[in-house]
Image 1 (cartoon, rainbow, N blue to C red):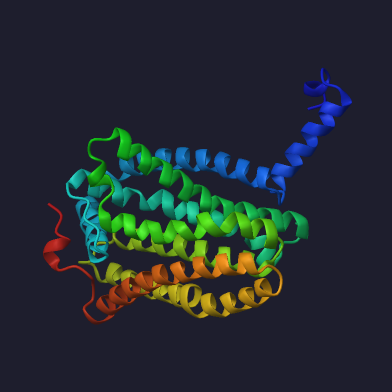
Image 2 (cartoon, one colour):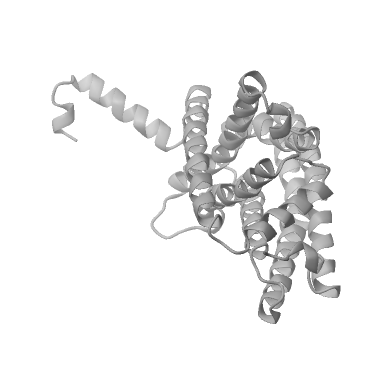
Length: 309
């Protein structure tokens, strides 16, 4: 590192070191926060492209491919989303793999702040949590840009962006896009804020990952039926705690904190929380429906839906 800096003046070296430190520590300033948002959005986009291609190469060889697509189709259809042709449905199903990983990473970045990790200082823990929050917003930002690109340049943009999906994404994305950077700036050192990011992203990662794995099980086998029931229970428990019980209690604590400190951020956060509450209801209803079918019927789809030729 010292050799790389031999041709720069002392002032330039100090400036570069300071800038790197600002980015690493997710400095609570508009310029650093926006730069991190754009750079993370590029990283997330590349990650999703690579993961989706890798997932397709694996799923194409699996006997449960048709079942996996059919069950993902059923889930989205129940939410009012219709992608039309089989290829677009397949792309939507594969999307769950990088999405689950992405949310798990964002949630894990908040762990040092929420729980404490030996060897990691509070300052670094807080910085990692701010990165975790931005990681979520980065996905939302690149998703919005991607859909604008599809609208302008793709002839099949309607299939890729059905109205039902756009409504769900509008509710979801509005929360992060409106609230994360202001929260990072004004409450970036709040453990309560970090816990909210940990719960929301962690819940999404666990739920999406568990559901994707459940959709690969051979539900003609008793052992896999048992696994499906356990996974359905886990998803429901995670959603109930993170998106209902703790969501409201934590929201009340955060609201009390923000109301006395910054009313503008309080109003913005309340609007975002209200939208997220709608999204949480959709997730809860879906989890309840799957759990009920898994427990009382044995498995979600009828036999004909899981038949693999």
